[in-house]
Length: 175
Image 1: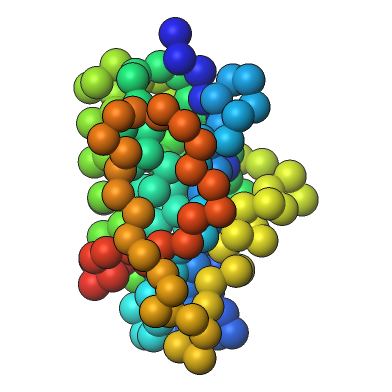
Image 2: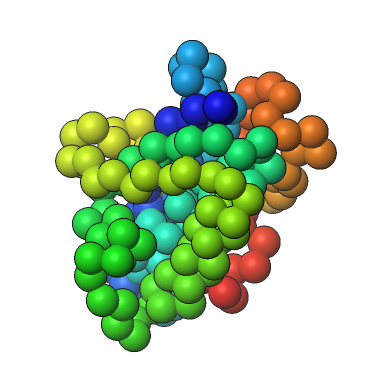
C-alpha cells in the first residue's frame, strides 16, 4: 500500500476576514521524500478568510493525492474547524468558507471511492510551522504576482518531487 503524510495550513492578513489569503501544502511519501511543497495565493478581499484559506490548502492536498495511486494518507492540520467538520464532529454553518467546505468534502468522498484511506488529524500550530510559513509566504498585489505560474497535476502520478512551487489557485471566485 502507498503511504503518505501531508500537512496543510492557511492564513489571511493583515485583516481577517478581508485580507490576502494564502495556503501552504506539503505531501511526503512514507520515506520522507517531498512530493509536494507549495505556497498558493488563494485570493484577496472581502471573500477571503483564514477558514477559506485553510480549506483551499486542504483541497490542494486532496487534488495532489488524487493524482497518485490509492493508498493511506495521514493529513495533518492545525484548524480545528476544518478537521472537525470533515470528520463529522462539528456542524457546517454558512460563512465565507461554505463553498470550500463542500469542495473539500466532495474531493474527500472521491478519494474514498477510489480506494483511499484518509485520516484527518488535528495538530497544534507549533507542529505545523512549515506549512504556516508557506501559507504566509504569498506575495501581495505589490509583490511579484507575474512570477506565479499555475501548477498542473502531474501527468504521471507522484513520479518525482515538486518542491517550492508557488502558484495561484485557478478558480479564485470559488474560494
